[in-house]
Length: 111
Length: 121
Image (cartoon, rainbow over all chains, first blue to last red; front, side):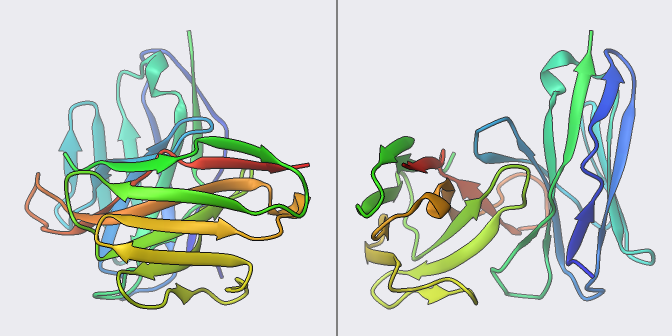
């Protein structure tokens, strides 16, 4: 089983709609969780960290479900500029710098 | 915020030549930098961890003699792809840890360089 799994999509979303997707991780002892955004042919950029209590930043909401070992990202009122690949990143062990990356969820916002 | 500068952003070279990629931390010191490689529609794969003043730590399956890493100062790490071949064509990205300022996790997050797209003919 892969350390981090994501459904690559693409997720075609009408502008203004809401889209949500999950990312599952295999190591129950994982400590840190992040969502990164990667535009085509660009480097990943941190979108938000995912805390145990969840995290919300404007139109973006992230949740952590430790029991089922997944994190989620929800985008409300989708904008054309939200089109990108959203990478799920997990730190499998405490103090370890070896982060595990998912393949990403590709989101395409359609006018 | 913390910035990691990477160059060149793209390079095209002939098979058999060597290519050096530089990664600099501009407004902070990075004792550790990470080098990743990403093939189209694939995950970022960690190649090696670069440690200032000591040898890099390579991931399993990554040839250390082919991918030379030098981390001579607290702000500069370099990756040299020696005797590059077409199968080495990829997107190479460096990163450094930065303590998250916003929020309350205090977690170390990765800040990435802009990446270097290598095409070997």
